[in-house]
Image: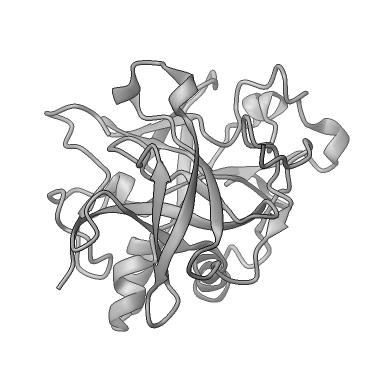
Length: 269
C-alpha cells in the first residue's frame, strides 16, 4: 500500500496551496505587474501552500489552494472524508494582496457534510477556493508565471509518459524563483482517475502543496496534493482538477464557478 504525505507542515515546524475575477478579460492587471496570480503563496492558520489557478463566477474572483492546506490533523492524515479541517469562512493570507481572502469552499468539509464514502474520492478530492477581497481584484492576473496559460480546463488527466508543467512557490526555497517552474512526466493514473503520479524536476516539496499542473498544451488538469514515499519515492500525487470542479459544481452552491484562462500564451520552452 502506497503511503502518502501531505505537502503541508505543522505551524510549529517549517510552514508548508478561486479567485473571483473581473467581469471582462480587459479588467485583469497586466501579467508583468500583477501581484496576485497562480503560484503565489497562501497561508492558512500558519500553514503555507502554493496557489493553483484563478477562478471566477458572478459573485467574485477566487484563487485555488489544496483543501488540506486548512487541515487540522497530522501530515499523514490524507483522507478528506475523516480528517480535521478548518471551517469555511476561515481567513487566508494571499501573497501580493492587501487584505486577507476568505476560504469559501473546501472539498474536505463538503465531503464530510455530505457523507461521501467513495475511497478514491475521499483520498484525492483536495481543492479549496479562497475568495479575493474586492479591493484586491484589480491586482489579479490569471496567467501562470514563466509558462503562461492555462489555455483552459483539460477534459481529463494526461496519460502515462505525457509531459506536464507546474510552478511551485515553497517558502523552503527561500525566494529562489529559478527553482519554481518545473517540467515533468506522468508515471501512472489511479484506477478511478482521481489522481496522477508524476516526476518533476525539481520534485514538489512541502510548501508547493496546492500548486497547479498543466498538460502539454497548457490545459489545467491538476492540483498538487501529496509526495509519495513508496514505491515511487520522490514522485508527487496530483489530484484531477476536472473531477474536483465537477464535484464542487454538483455538491455546493458554486455551480457556475469556472477556471479562468491566462492572458499570456502558453509556452513549453
